[in-house]
Image (cartoon, rainbow over all chains, first blue to last red; front, top):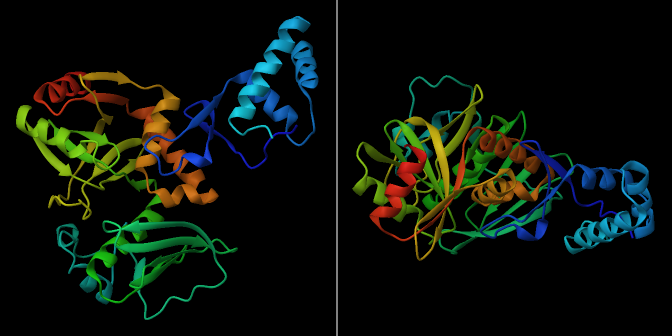
Amino acid sequence: MKINDKMKIRTVAGENIVIMQDSAGSDMTRVVALNESALWLYNQLTGQEFEVDDVARMLTDEYEVNEADARKDAEAWVAEMKKNGLIL
Amino acid sequence: MHLCGGDTVEQAMRIPGMSVFAIDPCPCEMEVKFVPRVTIPDCRWLHEFDIIDGRQRCRFGADAEGTYYYTFDRHGMLRFREGEGVEICMNGNVEALRFALWVAYTMMGEKLGAVPVHSSVVVCAGRAIMCLGESGTGKSTHTRLWLENIADTHLLNDDSPIVSIIDGKVRVYGSPWSGKTDCYLQESHPVAGLLRIEQRKENTIRRLGVVESFAALQPSCPPSLAKDEHCMDLLVEFISHVIEHVPVYRLGCLPNADAARLSHKTLIG
């Protein structure tokens, strides 16, 4: 899988957000906010092929989490990013 | 921003509501001019939409050099390039011309931090409350309820006032574009708050966080701006500034006096 490079991360009043393109013209714009670690993963992984294992390894290297938790977090992050079209 | 020059002004002044905004003498150089023809080169069309209750088909596009183009059904065309201003070629259809001037204002204003925001705006004790929402959600109904039930209030605009950031302050200005309500006022006020209106079976109000505020305000800004990356960058900067300085609320409401009292108590106190 890889990061969808057509999406653009923007800073709005201190938050990192992605504006979903499919929502134009609807009553509310659909916006996905990325927290600090999600943004870090996103930036690190942009431009490369990766798997859930790579994401889990990055989390254990960067943060104080055990492997099982990192794996769980990585799966959840990838699923959420895929759902919103940010990972293809 | 001003519209100047002989023919331009004469044509524009035929539009209802426009003459209220005349300033004499005009302090700027010509930025919008009427020309006999606008030639559109190879252009990437980014957005197609209907105006005037679906009776006119418009297109918005950009070429590789960053020049923007609009076509207004069979009634005319517009060209905008930063630094060169706007050229408009129209066949005399007043409604299309009114919209073309709105587009001209939108394209030039964005660079200056001035954006038309689809809203109905009531002024209370010198501060403006902007009601946002899709057509039919009750924006105008809610501002009317303020006028009927809250003291010291008047309507500023019922469709497309201009929100402008000047010296960091967010103000809203009357405009010649006020939808079906003839309300053309050359005045401006600081914005007390934005209300995203939703019809509900009871009256509730909740202040929105940054992400929800963005999602609430962006659909009320000119849709074409979101279709071009450069325009969207400027729009995001504008929205970001507005929501950092002005509170945004979601108002679930009935069309009754209590709804106006609730939003008045929350925004003005």
